[in-house]
Image (cartoon, rainbow, N blue to C red; front, side, top):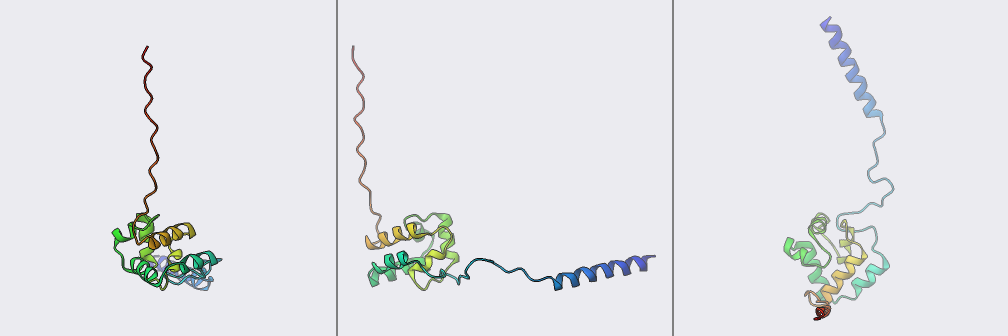
Length: 141
């Protein structure tokens, strides 16, 4: 009886393995363009235009921060928090600054902020402080 149960178990296991082998493998990322590490399929014309406004030195420095910067350096980039910093690290190495667009959460808006940051000499551009309204005086009656 044990031999029969063992034989049936092996037969069932063999059939399930052969069925798994004949099933067509799933295609990863079906419907998505294949992206190599750090490089989007093709940067948009807007992203290319933004990147072209950088000087060679600014472009090199931004690329260096994106490729080798530690967490603090990445967090200093405008629009980059912990999640986006980790996403940038995942797409390294980048061949060009536009490659950062392959990172999750980085779109043209964030990229434009990064370009602005580079053009400002890698210093935060302070927004003018809003004037506070004068405190209301209590009516003295």
